[in-house]
Length: 236
Image 1 (cartoon, rainbow, N blue to C red):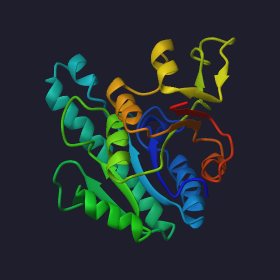
Image 2: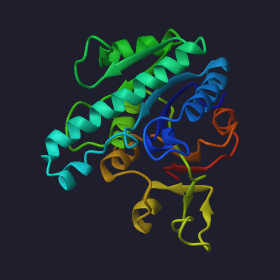
Image 3: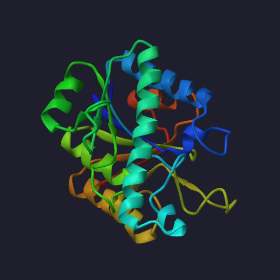
Image 4: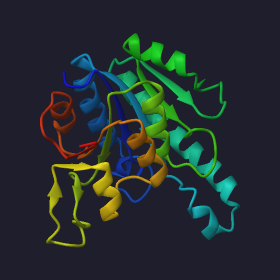
């Protein structure tokens, strides 16, 4: 395998599937099968999942809710998704641990770096929920930070788009995809990959990011085997 330990970042919106809200069981099962394939290859897997299918902190302002309160609500939304994914993975016979940025001992462990690494070494899939436990930080930032803390080889950002393009491919038919691009070029061209905090963390720690289409069967396993899938962002 090209990567021994990965941090898989999934968007909450992706869990909606064809629905307009909540969790689509078919999409959840699809992701479970893809993750199981990679686990069977012997790869150590950590996962961060968003909560946009349930609630986003930025929605708070529109509702008149305080931004900080809204961000905490968003953290709880990510935890709901993380619990759903944990349940699906365990039904498939996989061993998991759910670790939270905020203390909710009834359903998950608090995040402790050494314990998280130990779980990965023992072959458990570690899911990080509730962000980093502080407002004003996105799940992209959580993914970058946790990947650095557990010494992952790469951040795999699974989206509905198959890579990074010169423009939004859903709005611009002339947009072309990058196979490889440097952190500097992403900054320079103002491409929307991750929020600036998350992106800078990866750049400063020389942690590569691969943006790929998680909804296409086999993409995840192809990636960890070293095939060219999506767009690799690295220090060239």
